Every structure is written in C-alpha cells, then in structure tokens.
Image (cartoon, rainbow, N blue to C red; front, side, top):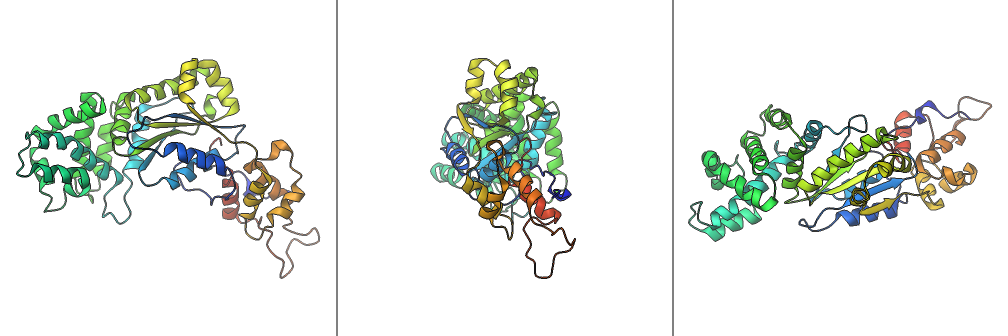
Length: 396
C-alpha cells in the first residue's frame, strides 16, 4: 500500500512544543541528560555531546522533552548556525532575547527577562548596601530583601517598591558602581557588563504594556554584537539559573571541517566568557566523524564531549510504545508485521513503515464499511504530523 502523502516527515525545531512523547522511546537518554543538567547554580558547565547514527532517532524530540521537564530553574538557549555552519553573534543575541522576552503566564505583560534583570540589579546592589555606600537605615533587612525577594524589591511598577524607585532616580550615578560589582563576581568584561546592565535597566523600567520596549532592547543589543557580548549575557543569566546552550542543527557542517572549526571556536569563546553554562551539541555520527573529528584538536574534542549521550536502535517495547501512541493501534500486533531490520529500528523509519502497511482501506472498496475501526494511521494530516514528530528532529 502506498504511504499517504500526509505521512511525509515532520521535523521539529528545538524550543517549539512538538508531538506527545511515547513513554519508552529514548527513556534512558532523557533521564541521563536530565540528570547531567540538574545541579547547583554555581557548578561549572559541561560539554555534552548527544549523538545518533543518523537523522530520525529523535534527538530534537529528546531535547524538547528535557527542556519541558526542567522548566523551572533552567534556561535553554538555542544556537542556530546559519546554513548549519556559520555562527552569527547578532543572530545568536537576537534569538536569545526573543526567547527571554516571552511573556509570563498571568504576568501582566512581564517577561522572563524582567525577572532576570531584577535578580541582576539586586545582586549588584547588595555589596553597596553592606558597605554603607548606599545609605540605608537597616542594612541587614535591606540586604535580606535583596537576597530573598529581588523580584518584588525591584518592581519598578509598584508604588511601594522604594528600593526600585530610588535606583531609578539614581541610576546615572549608581550604574557604574553596580557594573563594577557585577563584573567582579562574574569575571566578565566591565564594558560588557555595563552595556547589559544599562540595556536591561531601560527595559525593566519601561511599562510592560509599552509596545516597543522589546524591540528597543533587541535593536540596541544586536547592533555591534559579537561573541563576547553573547557570552556575557549567558554569564549574567547563569549567576541565578542553570543555563544550557543547545546546538541542534549541524547538517550544514557535513564534510565541512572549516565549518566545524567555526562552530567549535564560537563555543570555546562562550565557554571562556560563561564557564557555568552547559553546552549541548546534538549531531549525527556522519557529521561528527566527517567534520569535527578531522578538524579539531583532541583537547577541543574532549571539551565538547565531556559527557556523551548516545541514541541507539529502539527495543521492541519502545517500538510498541511508539506505535501505541497512535489512536486505535495495537502496537504489538503491528510490530509483528513490520519485519524490521536492525537498521530500521529508529522512530522515523518505524513510523514510515507503519504508515505503508497500515490496513487503512480494503482493496475492494475505497470507503470503509460502516463500523470499521480506524487503524490509527488515517490520512488526517495533523495526526500524521504528530506521529512522525515522535521520531522527528531537525537533523535528528
């Protein structure tokens, strides 16, 4: 039987919710990556290599599952090389800010970046309060508020947030001192810290309903952006949350050692600027072997693969789980009909073969008899897209 057109591959993009997860597909790898990414905020980041024999094993789907599991306390920043091999710092900054300026549910227009900015301002102000450089009647109470309630303390839009309003009135003088303190604790360039602190301050004090405040932040940040500016942004974020930089579209590097060097060099710069950031490189074996292995020094290869997580062929139980995720499908019975070879045991291939043999219509009639059950592989386009997405991925 010819596979329906609606079962053409659907490729997920990291950071966008995809299809429901089949419970037994890549479970061990999901748990391993989640375990590696969990850790104290001040822990040094690691280079994590996620490998699969070829596209279709579900790397992107796995990454999205982990992202959804670690929503609280983690920031996942996608890095998308242009044409799969060129890293543009301006695009990297813009992509990061687009994600960070997403509005919070029931937040009255506030964004994730508002919360990060308030943590950053509270962090910089603490030593100035403790030293007496910032006048305060009760230093201990003020510092406790900065440590425990930074979001409320720096609510620039609440009339009773005294610290926030005092900071806004005195930021022209206070800004350089805050930048110096933050630069000391992060180890980042004073100029870069001052840039981000001023940009995020202007973003934070603007009314949440202001239609142009996100655009103004992006315009200012992208102009003249380089790897150091992007790295400093990640370093500032990683003071308060675990941050994972995810590279998940490297098909363009295949057979291109120069492209692999550019990507690896950019990541090395970011690691230097933001040592707490975890870096996840998702790649197929052919791309890794043809480009990275031949182009990079042993030391750089080791830094990219401090932890290696590998996706291999699916077990029978995983395939049954994948097939059972479709409505009205007996996964065990269908598996018996697939006659899979060892090289077929990955999600995208399984779903394609299942679509080809599913008893969707009888040869005698183009219409099902009344009362016939749906095989679960109907030509409904949206269901088909969801099904293939279980094993799909941008290159994975």
